[in-house]
Length: 127
Figure 1 (cartoon, rainbow, N blue to C red):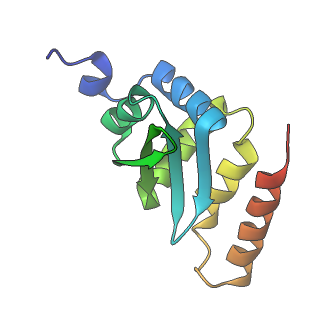
Figure 2: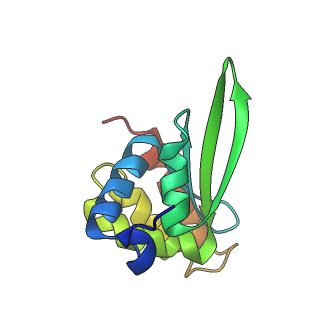
């Protein structure tokens, strides 16, 4: 298989904008033990492409009659990806900012807890 420009040189601006759209539409941005990005899809290419370009892991599970594929990225890698796609996000910009910057606070600090509460509130908003 021939490698693509993105695989040789790293993600292009188009790759970053595409991933931002995927995160906006199908993604989940959160703190668990640290920054997390997850994307669930019944389309394998929607998770294999970001895994190939940005790293992370892919898991599968059955939901009703469909196989659901999940791409997940944790920690510093998730933080760096969020910082790179932030200019292209439309709906999850505020969530991404909280997660990308929130890990600078100690895990059990009041500031981190406050950031987590803000994140949960944002997640409940409907656009």
